[in-house]
Length: 164
Image 1: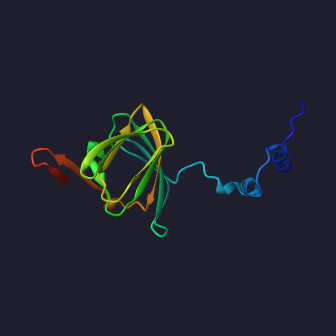
Image 2 (image 1 turned 135 degrees about the horizontal axis):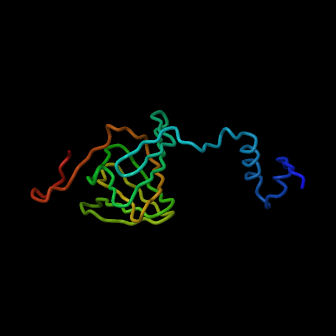
Image 3 (image 1 turned 45 degrees about the horizontal axis):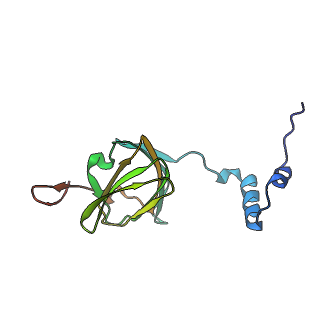
């Protein structure tokens, strides 16, 4: 049995009919593999899971992370947090995300399944964990600045939010 490697042109001929734009994109990727990334520039181990940073750039104002969170391991060690400037959207890729989020002064517990998303606007108190064993989700947001993360909790005696 002969081991033969197919040329790019032979590979393209075996693909189903596609638009000129799809063909141009395929040509670009096949001839420029350095544009395909399979590793993450920064990975951070957290008490609740892993943040895999894809992009975070102050100049463009854009951030994207792949987040892995484990069941019953709450973000911010169980406390809520908010951002004064950061505007973020969570898109669940696999598993299910349990998201506690304050909307109009009331804390709501949402469960997002695969391909569900939720926008967390600035000043919105929130926290998250996996609703099942593990959840993978993408966070797309304005630039991440650690100094824009504020931890807080609800004081039941004083009936108000307390920043920590």
